[in-house]
Image 1 (cartoon, one colour):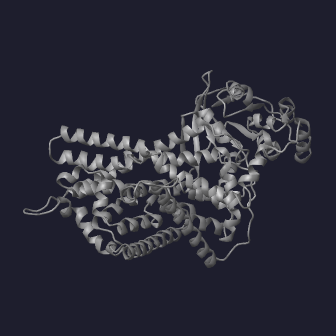
Image 2 (image 1 turned 90 degrees about the vertical axis):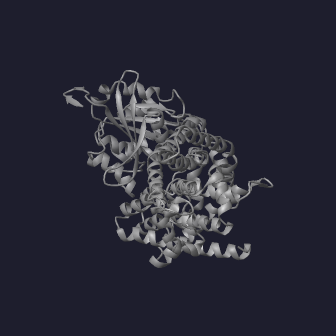
Image 3 (image 1 turned 90 degrees about the horizontal axis):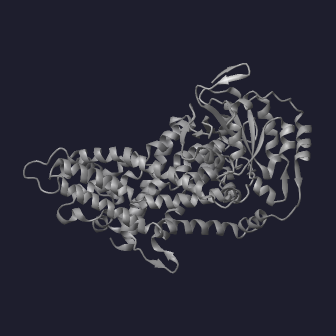
Length: 619
């Protein structure tokens, strides 16, 4: 952008920074402004995720939208708040800001007002987007926009980000950025006096009623009922992961099988057919079939987040977390780790105490991330009958138990670490609980699309490359003259697997599992595609047409299957997780400690599971 006096010309899109408190509706506004034109990036030098997107208005104005981490003041108390402060005050080159849209919760304007004034004093062209005004009116509170605009000296607009026409007034202002940029500077008010004056003049309360939020909170935050309600929600979620995904999973399986059969007929017998059918289709297809289960899991997480329940779960679990030496601030990072440990570890930047943050980082990999779900689903589907026990699905019950095992293990490890490093003085969780909302279909759909896109990108890049590489290692060199048995046994992968079998045999693993665990270090779910590739090349005759789950159920014992489940509860199996631990802690020793203790726990858990199960099952 080139500025000259009171005029300017744009030679690139203007950058708009979205600023606001946590839980003010900023993300919903970002989704409404950018639609599908958004991406996730990392801040330079750190690993905090940021969202970026593009906007083109009806007048043809182009904007680059940056959604900065939520803050309560310009005095940062956590590392994610430092990112926003640096962008506003230090003007980092990585985050150029031309305009600021400050998003405030109309139901709690008092919470935002001091920060609004502080941001205005920085001199940025600023618009105040007063969000959730519909909820404010329902609670009997009316904000006079004219008075608020006059007192602050900046444009003030109402926005209802959950409605398709709820941001029209904001777009009208953005269509004329010249007026905003060339607006005269406002005075520097005396903060304490002006805040009281502005609130008194701009806000009118028509009623002081016992709101719906309070009625719901009296139920879901009840000292006796709150925790069982949370467990019931989680239990239902994992039941749905299996029950609801059954039909779409069968459709995808049929599609993958049809594609494999088609290429088997089209291609002549030889190396190319083996690469396409046994390498690419067997590898990638064995992963794609689990997309419905992953999307169902994320659907529930997004709905709970959209509704306003997740912060309440953190508040409710604060006392439980304090019993192991952590605060409720660790709940959101740990919950994020159910999706992926990488953003979960990044989210620990909100934890102010350094010891608490390190311990939370170290236990985050124990949360059962979505990358484990294909592995769990494959083994559970192969060995656990798909039957109902009353109202419950047996497979969903086993999946729920695996998630609980990860949580219990994390609690135990955190308690041990706290005994070793010493407990900190308890810091109560202080947070603003957002108003309840009906989840918006648009926001949930965008979240699911982003997750599906990330998953499919992983399938088409990392998993594709790994499947091809594993096929090559499993195919070459060719078996010697007169060799008996599948050719893979004489390949590089087979030789390595037989070597590793000496190490993994005590925990019930065979050489095929050992081979599959190696590429799974790139991403946990690759274990499924690796097993698909290895067993496709190991099978012969009629076995080639048998789906992987059936092949495993006939090849493994139940103790072996249970042992592998126990292994994946603990083992990090992911270079990305270890890498982000190194970057977030800036310590090789913490990363090495995480890898060693997780692998030791995995081996011990698998060893105990295999031998105990073998004792009781007699195998």
